[in-house]
Amino acid sequence: MPDRMIVNASPLIFLSRVGGLEWLCNLCTERVDVVRAVIAEVAAGHDGQIIIDALEAEQRICVVDDIAVPPVIGAWDLGLGETQVLGHCLGQASVIAVLDDAAARQCARSLGIPVVGSLGVVLAAKRMGWIASARPVIERLLADGLYLRPSLVAEALAEIGE
Image 1 (cartoon, rainbow, N blue to C red):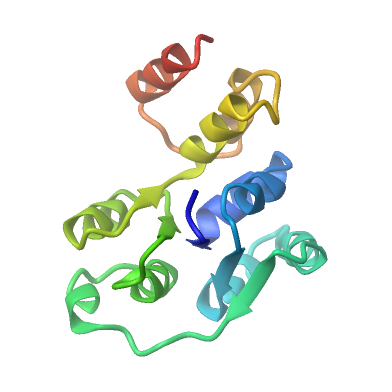
Image 2: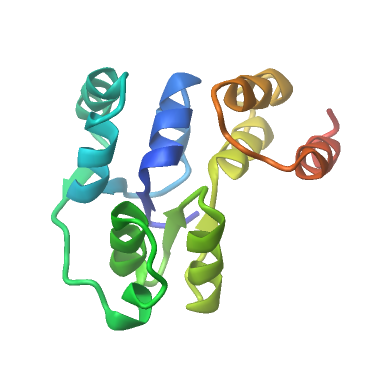
């Protein structure tokens, strides 16, 4: 288990809608960090205040300040939230970036930053016994707008025996 996870807006939004913020917190030994740029993105959404309230209620979630972005990440021209998440993760041992965006995940891998997305968190919750079945959770995420290739969903469900 990592010490910390640093999470972007998309996983926060999607996971909060399925009760998954607790799963995020349980997947690390210390805490989940959310950078201020991500808080601003979440707050701008239609259910932003509900999600912000849920974040504030979870003691293991910590809001951290934005940082100056290293040029190696800035060159990828990602969104502000993704850039901040990766900037906070760069060079940190035992920290995982929680990102759904494909380009941000590619950047993370190129820089040796461990990464997981909303789907990975749901699969971990199933493996840990925190949820009885991943399929309905994944179906809800898809219905809410999370894009996942159908082949990826099928592989993921097969991997956990669903």
